[in-house]
Length: 170
Image 1 (cartoon, rainbow, N blue to C red):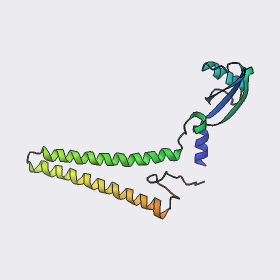
Image 2 (cartoon, rainbow, N blue to C red):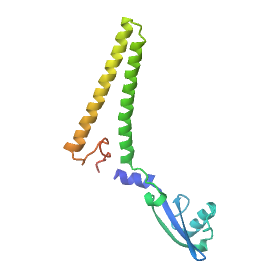
Image 3 (cartoon, rainbow, N blue to C red):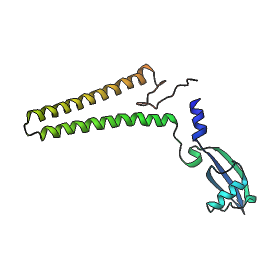
Image 4 (cartoon, helix red, strand yellow):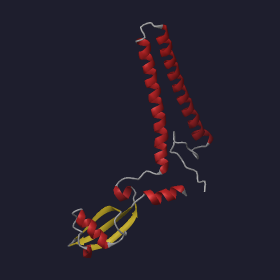
């Protein structure tokens, strides 16, 4: 239900105008945001604005409308599930990169410690924390993949090995 509401709010409508010009039929598409879809006058106004030859409403033969899809504007508008999958995967990538950076900072601190016992201990603590962070990230990813693939058999996905699925709660 939430996805249906979001689709109505987020997804625009496109229109395809077909104009009869002499012996040829010209077709063009646009995202419908200005007026009621299916109106030949709107087709003509948009055609005139974009420099299309369909500027005369009397030449408009047919106007088809529908939701924006791969056939509409040449790309698919991402769903909430796609967006959340990207966010979850991005979070784990960012966490891994930060853990590696923290590991490198600890290594640089160790190299530049100059033999100072206190500096070496701080550097060792940084390296230990970074390695522990990497182990935790790998463990969490492994557990999530096991849940997605084996336990739930891709019926419920958290966005790691398959796209995140939003259960219908209503």
